[in-house]
Image (cartoon, rainbow, N blue to C red; front, side):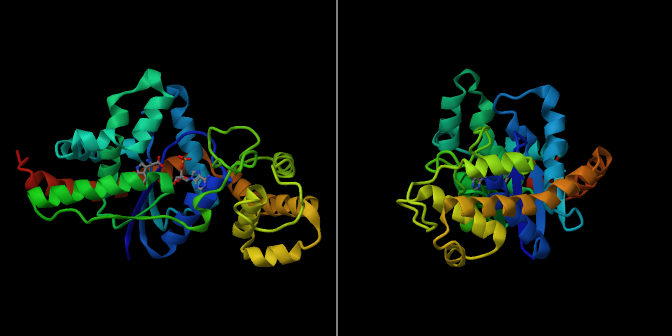
Length: 325
Ligand code: AMP
Ligand code: TRP
């Protein structure tokens, strides 16, 4: 069994891009591998947030995971800020991480551009905390979207540096990116990726109503020739819809093209919205049955298991670094 670790920041609604790009991959991996997944609340607070809502957002995200198929019997699911070893290791790793590497991170540059009023040391140190998350659990594989690969690479550098300086301690983790679901585009602007902040018509959230799904799919931007055919360069909109159809319907794109030959976009879009409604319905139904007490219990059990693993790793790290008092 390979050791898998990943995390997600508790911010905003989960959309079908997150589902196809990240969650779906985790659900597959938990069947055969040793998986640990965290809700990265310490990462979430490096950009502006509402402290009153944080707990609710964390509960909601957990519920979305469980409803989508993450199974606490098959993986460890916990909240980052409960396991204090993450901050301890982050501090220690910080002492061997060059400042220049942190300043070069794309996400640091983007986010400090976007939130000029809130450029804090936490945002700069974000990749060190992420390295601590990953390295505490002897991780071999980190399933993430493309945007996070750079952070996995800096994690590899930090681990290598630690091993050279203090002796073999950490495994060197590899990123894993899902191919097909790696980039679901916005329904309104197929040049841009579907995103949590693109609140309106561009993204379909897991818990959208049937009406919302229909409206958004029927209103999705497509070209004017009305031929259902995959062409990523000239027909970006319809290609994105075909991709979504293929991933949710478990069919290859060729067979969908054949099915809709001579039928036009209206019929294709109607069929796609029915498919999404059908596939998202069981997730919604399951969500309604999950109570806050269930979530609390699952997160607490996950915390105890995660903490035990993290403390074992920290014992070794402290010893190697001479912190033995
Ligand atoms: P975020 O929504 O940026 O917090 O990302 C959570 C996870 O979903 C990360 O692994 C992202 O790479 C992935 N993700 C976000 N947006 C998309 C998208 N439009 N298509 C595919 N994966 C995505
Ligand atoms: N930074 C990641 C994101 O924004 C979330 C995350 C936190 C993470 N810790 C992690 C991902 C550890 C993988 C491994 O999506």
